[in-house]
Length: 102
Figure 1 (spheres, rainbow, N blue to C red):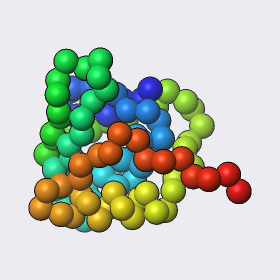
Figure 2 (cartoon, rainbow, N blue to C red):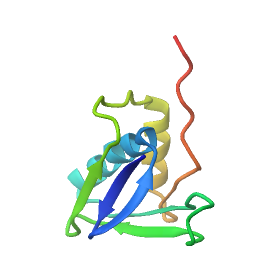
Figure 3 (tube, rainbow, N blue to C red):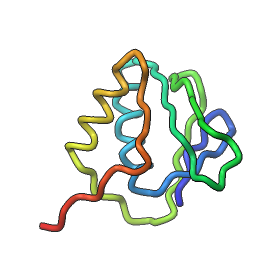
């Protein structure tokens, strides 16, 4: 499991999800487009739902469990980027599907 560290708080995601989040967050912040990111954590987490306002002014760091970079899926990236631009923000599904083997 990797972690998104946002304003000093750590939130765990699997490396694949975190890699896709990193790409979308980077794109949005480069454009100076803050947005809402929300998700329902694993059942072991005592919090029912998390929501973060992602903004350039707030410190952000990614920590991956695996040193090798994840392969990104363009379809997943496009879907996440589209959702991040909506008024409701980016609401993460449990895990983006892994690409089919080629």
